[in-house]
Image 1 (cartoon, rainbow, N blue to C red):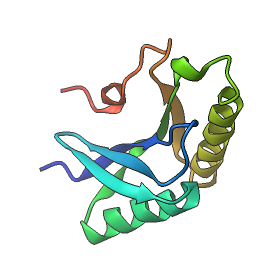
Image 2 (image 1 turned 30 degrees about the horizontal axis):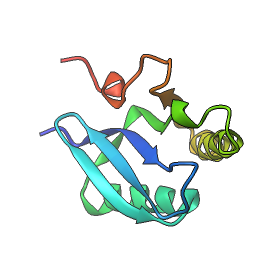
Image 3 (image 1 turned 135 degrees about the horizontal axis):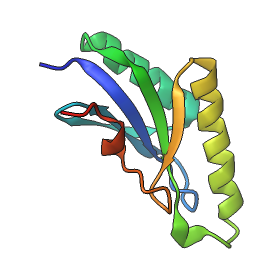
Image 4 (image 1 turned 120 degrees about the vertical axis):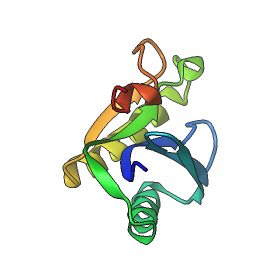
Length: 116
């Protein structure tokens, strides 16, 4: 059984208020963490979940945030960029990767799993 966590995907939609959900990507499953109150709360919940379930972070662990194309050119676009910046700051503080998925990136969360 693979016990490494490869990514955390933040479902923090810019046009809605918290709480938001988070997906932790393991090789063969996605674990849903619900009702995260803010980005630092989600980081604590990631660390708590990993510790309480005897998991480890992949050396290439990455925090992911979607690009919500449907809100581009609206008042929520700046909120999306602000949230992305907060997530990237957390990634930098913890020496983790950060990336965007969706939009025109061509990336999905599965892009960050090991090749089988």
